[in-house]
Length: 122
Image 1 (cartoon, rainbow, N blue to C red):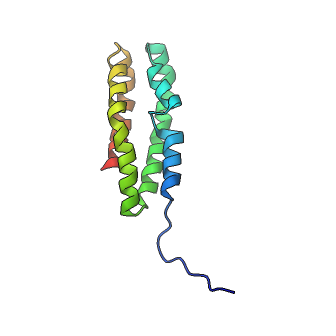
Image 2: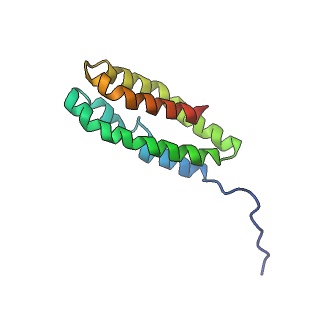
Image 3: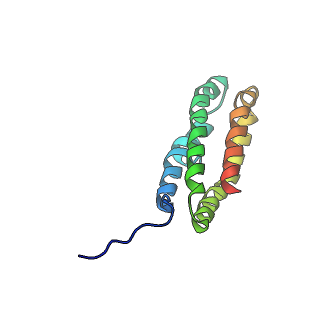
């Protein structure tokens, strides 16, 4: 029988798991989330999208807490992955907020989302 080595370092989520969580639950450039934004054409569709957008806020907090536990190289990978998508997200948000009345309804949640995303890439 071989000796088992004791784990002495902090437990961290594997980077591949983080990428999976990002892609499936938060990434606004994937089809379901992108469709959520591109589907906003008027006040009714903005009101329908608002709860789904709001649901992303605690998910981003969860990713942030997991990311904080990663080693520096893992954090850099996650920052790079998220940072590369923020430009297209800003473009989508700009298009949606340019729609009269819709922008006023969704701007507060967009501001919160972008602040949280910004916290992930700092």
